[in-house]
Amino acid sequence: MRINRTLQCDLLVVGSGLAGLRAAYDASVAGLRVILASKGRLCSGASFYPLTGALGSQLPKDNADKPFYLEELLDSGDGIADRELCKILVDEIGAEIARLPELGIPTRDASGRPACFAKRERRLAIWSDWDAIRTRVNQVFSLFPNLTVIPFSEIQRLVIREGCVAGALLVDSLSEFVLVEASAVLLASGGYCGLYRHSLNTDDVCGMGHSIALDAGVGLINLEFMQFIPGLTAPVYKLLFGEISLWHCKDVVDDQGEQVLQKRLPPDVSFERCIRERSMHGPFTTRDDSRYFDLAMMEQCRASRSPNSFTIHYQPSIATDSNQLVDHVRRMYQERGIDLSTQSISIAPFAHCANGGIWIDGHGNTAIPGLFAAGEVAGGIHGADRHGGVATAACLVFGSRAARASISYIRQHASVGVSEAEVMADFTRWIDNKACSVVTAMDVLQQLGESLWYDANVIRTGSVLAENLAWVRRMRGLYNPARAIEAGDDIKQALKAFHALRVADALFSAMIHRTESRGPHYRTDFPLRDASITGARVVVSEDQGQISARYVYPKGQ
Ligand SMILES: Cc1cc2nc3c(=O)[nH]c(=O)nc-3n(C[C@H](O)[C@H](O)[C@H](O)COP(=O)(O)OP(=O)(O)OC[C@H]3O[C@@H](n4cnc5c(N)ncnc54)[C@H](O)[C@@H]3O)c2cc1C
Image (cartoon, rainbow, N blue to C red; front, side, top):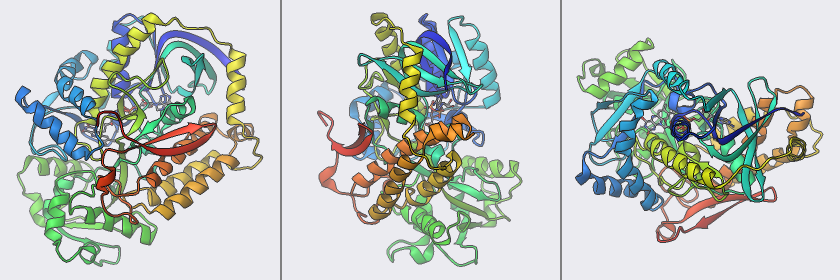
């Protein structure tokens, strides 16, 4: 393994989803020499998930609505959302949406009902048509001679000199190593849901940014709070469910036609009430009676060891409901040849979005000078449950803020030269744990995907999480990416598996550490919310290769 070429820039932006696009554009306008490296093509990640019609951001209706919006975010966050960061988001999202068209993303307003977990209906700015957006973003970016886009190129490790970021090592589209010397790096590499066997994400959303930050000594916060949304397993795999369709749900049965929800409901919760509450928000939460729906779905999947055993039958009335949202879901299905009034669908909880990540402040700073983070890879803003339309808002507001902070950082910090030989030698030592086993990247990623999906989903149990963590740690000792590459494994897959194991170690550690149920984190062995730890965040860090989790109470909260 050797470095094939070295590139220089002021700012390396990692990831070309919404957060990376925002940051790369702003830094380019400021005249910095920018490299935008992306594992997927330009405009990829969750921001451009092919099987969703549109994305949206929730905006305050007007200035008077801002305090209500803020309090609602904190309420859904249940002691975990950061007041200062949420206030920034509420105050600045309007201006950021107004700036989106200059990036090639025109928006329009939509309405229908309050966003998931919101109490009031507010402005929802939406955008769609990924191919058209990609073409326009390409056109906009081509106007900047100081911006270089390198798609299909993956950051593998940061280069740190004297405690500050000095660049990064990448593997490019030809699977060759590239050293990027940079004064600052801005991670916008998205979440980690793509590691799950069933996720509503593309494969490039696989937590590599989290692994790289951990290795550099940066903490990860709130990892246990993730969103799971029902997705289809049949007849069309990976299609979003559209919970509003539950207004017309007739029955929920297993593959033998037996009732699977009714028998699991407590006596004081009716089928109708559970279904009605479940129709009000996409993600799973423990905070209302809708939880029995998701828990039944997962229990069913775990019992049958299959994601195809929770089937919804609809009433014929779904064909004639004139509600705008029901109509939208009906049409989404019709476009894929499914008529909900006559056909049933099977659903399961798909990993959808991370609410936590690399711990940032209000300017996207991390604990390492010169390392910034924004978008779904970043954590600390959102709480346990997150409103719909706020993940994209965070990408835009904090993508823009992190770009500004990196611009002023770069103006005060000249880049330092680094030696190719030293960087490569360090990297080789890092990935070569001397294990001689023949475990392949495919083995690691497949087994990990299953174990995350079955055991770190909406149902979590301490002893089962601990078994999984023990397996992950064993694999970290057994799996040697350097050996796998020598044996002919694809270099990117081999390194993806290496990072995936570190992220899974962090994720299981966080889930084990939170010994209560709150928001989307449900523990069968601690089924109740523990008021005595309200406000405590789980922070995961790595020291000398060992990952550990602890509770942290941020100052002033
Ligand atoms: C189906 C779906 C619908 C959603 N709907 C909404 C919604 O309506 N409103 C809302 O607020 N949120 C929504 N979300 C969540 C929201 O879309 C995401 O949180 C947000 O788009 C993430 O943007 P991002 O830029 O942080 O990351 P992503 O868009 O995921 O982009 C990550 C980028 O990083 C790249 N990358 C990854 N690893 C590396 C590496 N090692 N080196 C280089 N590049 C790398 C990827 O290729 C990609 O380009 C939805 C999510 C999904 C999946």
